[in-house]
Image (tube, rainbow, N blue to C red; front, top):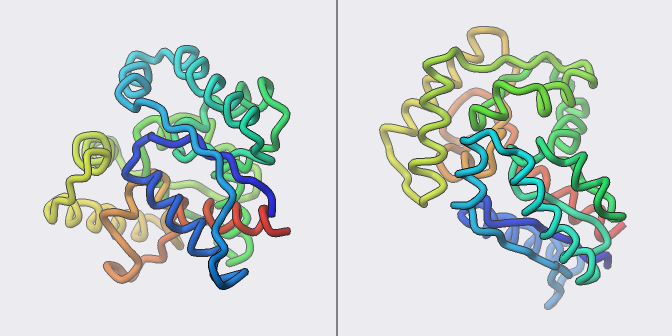
Length: 229
């Protein structure tokens, strides 16, 4: 079994989901008392969030590069960044380490292609929805990306930072997200990517007729596949 490196804490609410899913999937594959070999470095998200909203991505890169190098020194064979947004600095992390990086957008594109999805809605932080670093990874695979309109993006972003990252599950926010899912489907999305690792804490496939692709679940599953290959 390979050792999985995780940069977590962004937020820890979703990092614990990664830890649970990865260990559950290893046990399903190997049985008995087996669990995953993991090196986890959990950052202080308050520092990251402040730098994100200042636009200081260089500052965030320094923190995550240090975390990645510590994970590599700890013996990890490959790396996951346990958040969609911070894949904005994935190239800098790849340059600073020798570990392969399992990119969350590429992992998601692989599943979308398998399922024949060519037009997809994208929910996430404002950074993920509006900037090119994530969308372009999907578009290069021939997948059209549809994002919510401006007011909807504001609501999605606010709920992530002010509620989900703080463990707050609000029924009104769930209703807001479900309305946005319907809007994306009406605009031609065959499915919707839950492109923030916390969104799966709020909405699940059982809540809607719109097909959902939870990036946390996809990322964790492919990590286990790679670890056991």
